[in-house]
Image 1 (tube, rainbow, N blue to C red):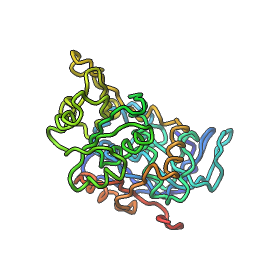
Image 2: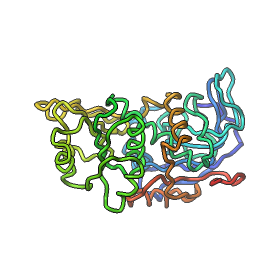
Image 3: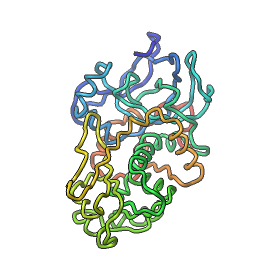
Image 4: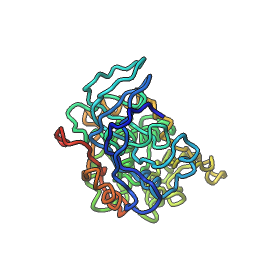
Length: 338
């Protein structure tokens, strides 16, 4: 665990027992301090993601138990704030007071992002996009790196066609925008109310979401598309969209691994998207910052909640239909939505 100074408390939101949103507890915890190779971030914003719900209900209990952590557990996978401490022997281009964003893994020794201060390895953070608020910057690291990893494991070439399910969601939206920046042709699913959003994000073609989506894509592309990023986890429903020897990228939860192939007679390959592979990929995270500054990636905030309202934020994400990210805010000494 990270070294701590007893008696100096910070605000945190934790899970002491698994269950519904009501089990989230706002507590005081000892502030962590940066060790060698680490920085401490004064957190102003931390996002609420579906993975946080998995932690809260106990679906990643096995991964937590195999870590060095003990209860209470702290959710949260991405933060934004200010560097306020740099550990000894830490090589970083960051300085005290820099505005940063970082990806976090709740199963790591750091715990998750729902806290007033967090300590991360220096290579988990980079400068926040110029002109962004803390709330906006917090939406990029985990979701953006998940999208980046999905495209990297597929390894498509410019001009190839990619289908994206769940394109209106946070990860799906980033997949569309990053694929556009990579020069891919994108066909995405959307509900009628989301068609304008998906077009704005960069999709070249749109089909109706829901049952039969794979068939609708195949009607547009009789030869089949090169790959699918299935952020909506529709599985077999999207397979008709793929050409023989195509690829499907699927985001996995902690401890979950799938088979390497679907319908071997067609040679369709599953590519697992495992975002912890990019936890320390500073170059990838910084490339997302650059794209945000070039307005090629949109930082989408659905709503903000104070940390004390974490349970309500979890209820909102479980109701579904969120476009963009729900964000928890910490500290009141700086304007959060500059």
